[in-house]
Length: 317
Image (cartoon, rainbow, N blue to C red):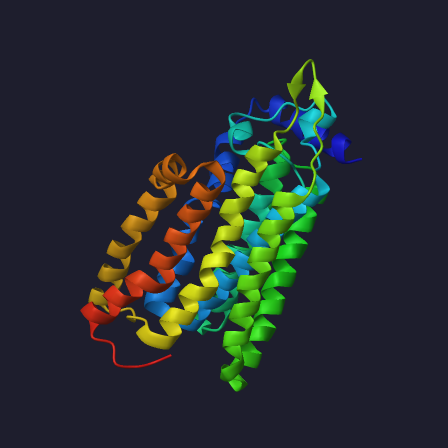
């Protein structure tokens, strides 16, 4: 049934001469590239608590997604059935195992967390619906492009949704019990360590076709180390910021927006260019983990220090 659905979409795609492919490739790519900038801006400038909620949800779901991928070890649709031909250059960002969809995880937590934040304000409620639309569109794009099965996307949506719900309950609990936050941060840090040990020590399939390895587990471990690195870094970064920095969001003044937008420039550079030098210095696994750690520490801790200095924040969180 899943392959039949992908073949139906493929036939439709080809019948309209791939006219919608560039747009859906852009939607898909946005979820793993520039979408990260929205919750960062929210964290720095609009609502520190909401920004933390979105980032905590993403870090947990993204790490869980990596572990699930390396536990199930499901092959991509075109490996399961050679009739599946991925659209455009979608295959370039769709190597390795298939289940669940990482793009859908990113979209469901980042768009979803943003939707929860915007829903709190009367003037921005309509944008919440737009965020939900783009969650669904991103998931659909993975099927349309032929790089994920419907169950890959569905489980990605469920995992992202459950993580958002669970983190929302946790954040509500911590409002009444702030003294418990350190325990949860320690638990998250230890969970990340356990995940790294699990994916590193577990065995993986080595299936060959015509002498070629279908999926190289070592390459998949590269992505998993990167994903788990976000959770590993988030917990100590939040603890240090909470304990010693205590910055306050800038607000939507001209100065606050300008400083926040300028702060996003290094983030964009890190997402695009930091991986290569980290890998060259630390190796493919640990280099990607270090890259993730650098990004999270910059977002959660280092640039908030700059914000506190530049904007002379006096309130604490």
